[in-house]
Length: 415
Image (cartoon, rainbow, N blue to C red; front, side, top):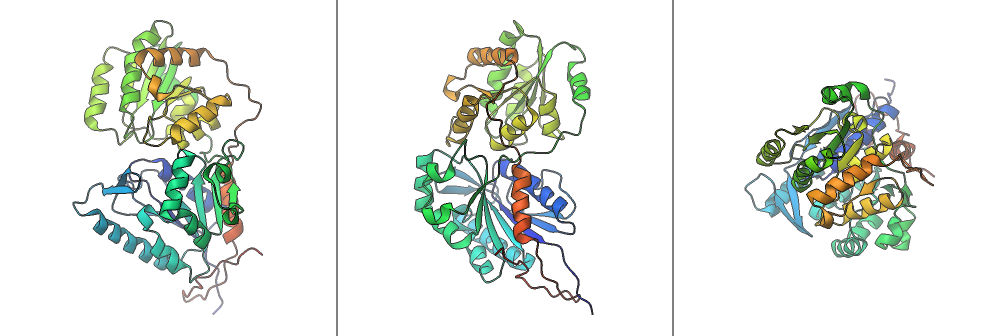
């Protein structure tokens, strides 16, 4: 019988036990890959407690691992299972390896951790070495303070994992903003594998900006709409509560309505407290919204923490933004907020200066500011460039027999 051609298979590993950032980014990349490769299949192995939170394109499935979360450098704990972490880790390793070998990917895209949480990806990587799968590591540019990343990557063997297993490393950022090789001390033999793609963000909003603004400003059509978000919201309570307490001072000089989108991980009790504090004020509190991009686009000002996805989407929309990064344990958000502010892309307030008074002043100042004029605008084509790279590396799938047999080495490497 005549042979037939099968669509490419992309396997994604995304560890995001207490947040939505990695899951959001990999979902965007999966959708772009499927749009570029008709008939392709994408399987994402993830461990977010909310599972498949974002809508996905046809051809994309999720396989959920038992959730874990990081409580300190090299220190992890199960989120739900009442089992020793070592046993949960063993279960995760077995699932990842079995899924990788059964799915038989043409391209493996690993998000953030070259060897997975506590090395859980290593058995799958070693098994896949016997195939011709192309292995790609995807990194947001800023991970943590450079000294911390250097120490942890050397201690955990991350650089060795990159050298042994990965053909390329895609950096979701701009070298001009943050030079990964220099800042994190990448050894020369693997620095050549770095590919800067630009920032990964969504495509254009689909909901009318005017319609959303009318919904929230119907009683105050001349007011400014301030939208506050903090990603999944697990550590957003301090920002949200401080902002709610700042609203009376803001109202003394600016007519505005505040929409707070807490995220699904903010505890229900804390969300209820916000609603109680907001009584009598022009404040709406929502746990989540159907598409955050539409709501960011409707805002006159976005007040947010400085997570990767939120900031990238703010930049893509050109909206005024006030970033208040988390205080720790990672320095990632502080570095991102200060670096973007230095380029005039956003306003920011250091977390150790966060009070109702300072936040109110910063909100008013940001609302008064004219849209920034930049010497260099942010590079926002990360989603497209990353997938162009994956497709270029993995598009040449060998013909397979019509009886279903498949050459697991279906990738023809670039010369």
